[in-house]
Image 1 (spheres, rainbow, N blue to C red):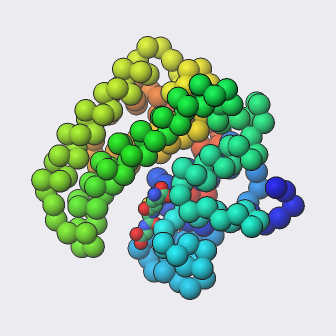
Image 2 (cartoon, rainbow, N blue to C red):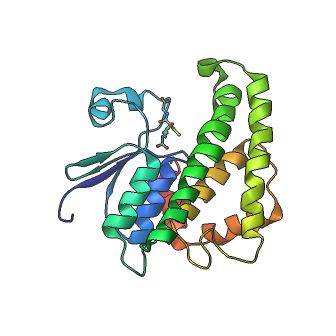
Length: 212
Ligand SMILES: N[C@@H](CCC(=O)N[C@@H](CS)C(=O)NCC(=O)O)C(=O)O
């Protein structure tokens, strides 16, 4: 899949950076359409033709269109990664563990927890006030992240051991959401974040993902 246009739509969020970061890790070229949520830019006819759900990020890679950040991340990893840059393990058991981390992060830490806080804390003008839901989400996050702290606390540098993978992009981007909601992060997570954010691919992704 080379020699065709590749475009990432979307900047400015912890979800969009997953796409940019993965692309930079595997070194694939792409164009950026720097649209942002809740600006009207995700509601144009041009963008809705790409993603009728009106959400970023979206990837157009030749004939392939993907509109979920984790799917985009894994696509870059499997389509363009080589054994050296491969962000997704290939051995079946390792791949299963990798998938488990990705689903856990996307569902338990992000969608049902931090995104609930985003909706009912930050975006109350759209989604309404729900202080109980926000409080419970905060408590739930603390309970779920404890397993990550224990896992990383055994001396490993990354979720899958010594090797950086797409699961680290998923976790670090999700912890970025937590930071915005004044969730206190354990020192193990703070050290981990500093480690993965020092990667040149993250720095390059951050530069393109940050609105000018
Ligand atoms: N599950 C999707 C969620 C994407 C999503 O919620 N994107 C937000 C920004 S982080 C968005 O585009 N919101 C636009 C809107 O709701 O108008 C993913 O991970 O890609």
